[in-house]
Length: 512
Image (cartoon, rainbow, N blue to C red; front, top):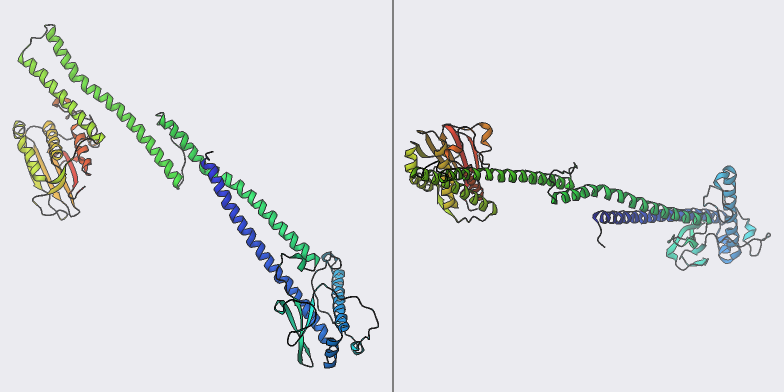
């Protein structure tokens, strides 16, 4: 089964959120347990200090220390007294603040207040001299007694390194140590003797697990809505593309955001607009071609029918007129064919180093008769200025035939639309940035400012001075633009200082 991008985003976000939640849960649990373990060990150490103080207060002489070492009952009595003192302290605290005491017996809080440790009479250190029975010492904390060499006197332990130790000082001399096992693993609840502490650890662990589960559920829900929010413009984009496939170019996606999806939507809207413009251009192109072809064909048809009906006599003048119409029609078809080849990339270009001045000279010399017929003067000059190199022979990397066709079309355009007795001036120059500039000027009449940007559109003509009556098909400058763009150049039109039109061409001297 193929997953949609929304489902993939939900899965990805959910896994990410679950991973972060799991890491946070484990980190919080470890920190809590480490901190609580340290807290329990601090409580044990406080109790150990209290017990050490009890021993120090009751055993002040050397013989008393020796009696403690030799008589286990004294050790057990001290443990019992210490336990009783812990309980009395807790009960006193509970009477002061009953709301803080909800444990019974072994389920009490491990909080110790300052108290006066019980004292045993000196007779109590005599062997067997215990007047009151005692219960076994509390097993709440496994206290041990060690000598100065840390050898065990009382208690059962496996390793001395895991003990919390307090010094036992008698007669201002270190006589031994009293110790207690240090908790090292809070996961073993059996090691925590206080039932309240066990319940606290268990409840906190359950709370952490519950919080983690709720966080995971919320993360999945949030991931779903985030994925839905992110994929909503993509779904709208898919629907718009489906409409684009059936040539509905008027549908745009409304999504404004400065992100990748916003850029994608903007590109799609631009593509849709470009296709709409292209469709309109194609429709106009077909309509214009039909109109351009219909005019000479209608003329030919009318002339031939008139001759067939005997309205007009067949003569060389009529034949020449029909021949001119055929030639005009042939030029139009040839131009259309060339533009079609240019659009499809089927035109072949053979690039080589070409001298601009030589090509221009060849074009003007080839049309000397036409120039004299129109009484047009021409000149080829170099552009001057600080931005141009002082070079007489400027070369470009171009196709010689296409470059010749470019200049010939410009010359035909100037001869067709420039008044007799006018002037054509061509200026060429090479800049330091490895670019070649060709500025083509002709004299009046000029074109309107509104028409300057449309001169390179196919079949476009200036309605007044530049029209069909002078033989133009409206495709010459379009072909010029196609040739320049094929050379990775740029062509533009503006008003000329001579009163006519200025065509500026930028080409590159380097290889394309």
